[in-house]
Length: 411
Ligand code: TYM
Image (cartoon, rainbow, N blue to C red; front, side, top):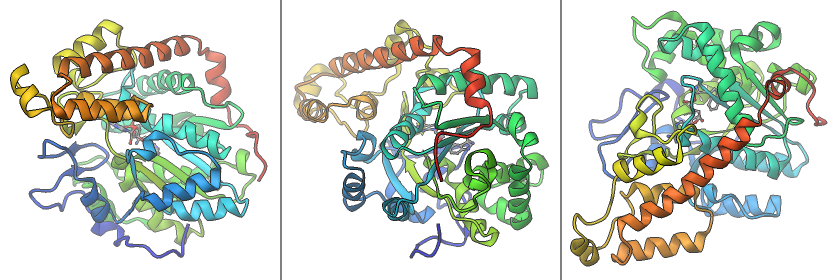
């Protein structure tokens, strides 16, 4: 989208590398904060030049859709956006948009943090009744990790099963692996080339921190993640239309890709994609880092058993409670750093119950053990139900979702 007032700085000036000593570090590969309460998301909005999801936007979404917003929006977990008002303006004028999100298949099992954008995307798809494209960047993981192409492709299929298990509508969702799709779609490749021609090495160095010894595959990869933002990359869905607006839900670590995309879009005669950014689901050890697939003890995986979930939460979930029961009763717990409480804000749907827990934990009435027990039950239920649904996903279903085809939508 273009033409709106914006506080976006020139794209290469928003470097992930040139941060002050005391700043948090956020890029697509590293999320780190020195503060026990984690990333300062207000500061990040200023540095990245995005907009806060404020009450006005939330009320407007409720008015336009006629239903309450998802708790992930209400609780400030999706906290930042770019051009969401424009998406709503167009939607009101009966000009629908499409959704685009993705996953880099680096591991067999996805963790709870990865679920966040997908759960929210599903809600957006149902609420706005729009098509969705999901990119699996198996090529990215081949370039960045110690993986063969074949293994990256296999992981893409495994992760696709997890995504399908979340219940996306097959008639409105196209899931594609870069290794499978790009070679079959000249329009996608043309958009990649257009982006590649417009971004200099200097710019990607500034945006992504690439160095002289990074392989050239990495340097040109951002164009591949940019291309699905343009409706012309999916001729089978949009009949060659270039002007279908795109909305991308993701955690804020992916924003560098889309700052770059928004910078080149007008020069390509395309619309800038809009974004909704989430905070990070923290590591079990605390909010200084995000849950990461490469550290098994930092994460709860969708493949974890009930017993593993219980052990991990009890053993590793950082507590904001007092060191002794007496101290806790006297001083109360600190929800701002307590990981179990943070997890409940992502997954406990009942607002009143959550508010009561916060009150009672802060006053010292509730002990950490209770909070952990409550969380373990919720997580075992979520992961258990996911396990069952995933077991029902067949190879035929994967094939169906991944076949380029018309979606059930008229533009
Ligand atoms: P990946 O596989 O690292 O992450 C997939 C999605 O999950 C988000 N995410 C998290 N959200 C909350 N808490 C966390 N701890 C957490 N960790 C990861 C990511 O922001 C992402 O939305 N290059 C991408 C794949 C991709 C993509 C996209 C993502 C391709 N196109 C478009 C978003 C939108 C990647 O490796 O994501």
